[in-house]
Image 1 (tube, one colour):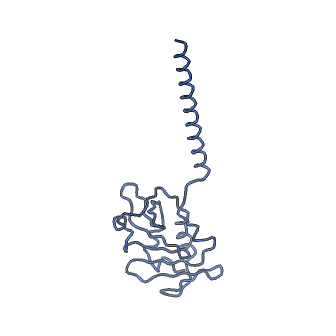
Image 2: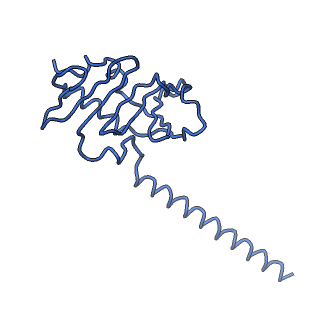
Image 3: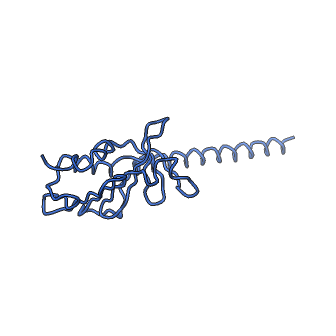
Length: 169
């Protein structure tokens, strides 16, 4: 009789130890996640210093902008000074937090608007394709390095203006 109660206590103690370890691990993971913060759209490949930005709108000429000292100049399709305000708004895309992420492998990109109909923006050669809005949560699909990201971006309307949205007035 005494032997079975000892075994029961040992089993309960092991079970409680397991539960404590599990909760400790979950708390550790939560703290580590909070310290990391949310991942954003910025890619390390862009680098610390922005030198060039290229925008490709479907069925329109490519817009090329380059840094020239403290100013930015549009070099294609026209030569003009770039609006600082528009440039600042455009670069906010890089700091947008990622709400969800999926691998693009095996996915039909046209379903997300990430095929040839996507607006493509390259920061220092790193390409971001902006597709459709998700109809449920209204986040935009963005393709980066074979990953489909969902972000709450505010640059699509600016990009849709084309050249006129970037020329200094």
